[in-house]
Image 1 (cartoon, rainbow, N blue to C red):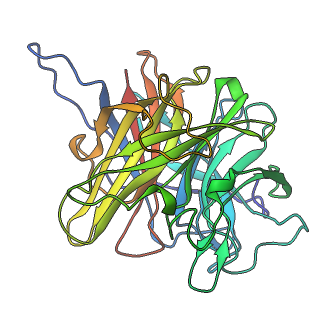
Image 2: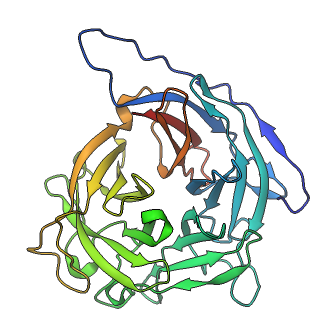
Length: 358
């Protein structure tokens, strides 16, 4: 799919398989590490710098993954990549990048620098198009709405979905800076589209601290666009004192047909302390619909911890931002594939992680 048709294969010398010892006296954990690969820093593919990978999705139809870069057209035009990533019971094989395409505006142009901030990308299970989110911008002089955009496989624009009015950028309401639309997923067989706000809207209260969590929003809308419901999602407190935050980095339908259950990746970062990354199983059943309404005192989404990524044996715990279901294993386990955003920094890594989930 690359513009020059080239393919690039790299093999990481990092962990390919981690065995989990069996203990007869205890039940095996529901999640285990299959392996990981590290993409070389500043890898060149088809004239672009691979990095900033903030979202990933898997197509059962093609067997390929798509990953979106959050490059704001600073290094290269805003873009996505396609790749093959062999994932099996014995680990993760070499990652093969197969293509890259620039994302285009409705006028057909590539995005000018700093005019877009891509975060999440999903295959549309009905059409094969891509649906991607971007965070928008909030500065002293700029208020730009977050958005949910649709792209054809060649990167050309196919429109946008509407967003709730309370998530538009206004001086005293809407997403806080760098805490807009991070997560998104199709649900209910593709009839619904769900997105998350990384942190609390300005009107919903302060961001999490080490002593207090916070509430953010999950929005459910019909694939044709209209928002149907919003739910309060309870964020954990920041895991330690210091300058840091916690928010939703990605969401994923736990079952493609179930409209109520989701995996939620909470990413907490504190300067000089690093990351804490946890994946929760969240359930909207029984939660109050707060579309266009205050979050308090409405009943929030319930959640339970599925896995703490700091406890599975990764070689490094970095800025994981994207997750997708991969192929099912012969054991019946599902694979969960994660990607980290290196922010184009040589102090961070682009890491592909595969987990097996019972």
